[in-house]
Length: 367
Image (cartoon, rainbow, N blue to C red):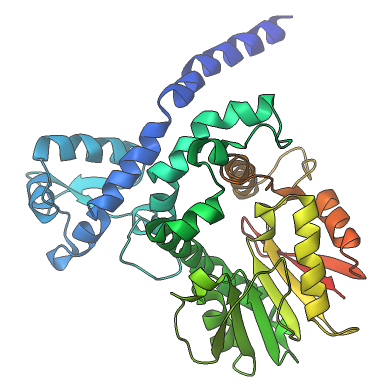
């Protein structure tokens, strides 16, 4: 009885603190966006001799008000984004970068920075639908009640991006920075899947970043970057990669293997199956395969105690599912059971799943 009372008191004490995360939680995102906008990580990194940079020096470097900058830095230091350390003479303190703050460098294309993704998700177009999230829960989309994004903008995200080059560019940059992060992981963990593949199509490949990485890693592959015409119009020109405009709902170019990353989660089961059928038809019988890079949400915990990294990865996957609800009409993150359903409905003979120790994994579907 006493232990039960103590547990209740502990839960109450924890709740009294945790509730504030939901009251002011947006401050985390807003302060990080501010740091990216002002290029604070770059200013610290470029400071002479890699010494800690003082507030006065930083305010000059980023052209900011010292008093306001101090408050932003105080907050981000507390959150572990930056470090505050003594200067060399010990008479003052200065700031240094951390591995986290370096991932907020908008000028870095090193496979670690997700700064373009932060700017995309914090843009007004993408923030507004979150305020309508409850509407989709109360009134599921049935043709009479639009999903949150459509309710705010009058059209879905893809139609808005086609009419808005700035938004389209932000989407492309966000997807490209994630590609630079995860595709090398996939290439390293799944090297055998690319052996014997002469041609590969990346479906929904945006600016061609994925195929650019893959043909460098596997130079025997001829790559095709396949996306909507308005996206292909601004795609990169890369050695070994041909840019092809089209619509995955109509057909996918013929090839030995299809690569499709973070596309299927944008669509409900009916559309997802249609896309998968077109991918299946694009590859040859018997040896054809489709490499799907997506999240797989756990249906239950593997053990009573999850590793801290596994728990955090699962949290990201669940956050992504909320993003799909806010930003797409029918998209969702799927459990393995849900993936099994759409893959079987699309007519694949079998599939396997490979973990790459990331938010996403690789599902290999064989024709």
